[in-house]
Image (cartoon, rainbow, N blue to C red):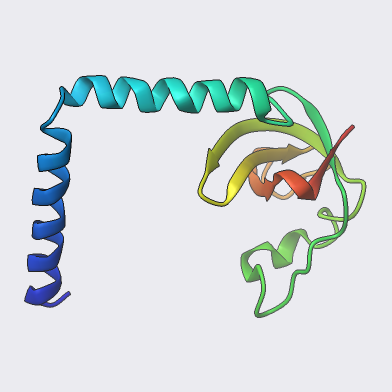
Amino acid sequence: MGVEKVKEAAELMRRSLAILGNGPLDFYLTELVAAHELLMGRYAPFKVGDRVKLASTPLITEKVRYGWMGWRTLLVEGASGVVVRADCGSKGFSFGIHFDNDKNSGGKGEFCFGEFDLLPA
């Protein structure tokens, strides 16, 4: 990383702190957490512990999701599992899934899917 990028980042941080300086940082962070919890509690299609299944077989090749190559036979349409992590961000809702038939990692492998990749089981 070049010095110019560090200077740019420092300036952005300075401006961000100036904006947040108009009120207590704790207030803004508390509000952000509350908004996240409200969004997840009210609008997330799945919660931790829910049973889900894959809506379709994901594309897995040498160029797309290469790290999942060893699990191609597991990650097929209709494969069922349980939600172990639920989150949201700029790309929408995402869910960590432990699949029932995951023998490669003792059933502890977590695969991340978006809300439209999953269906209720």
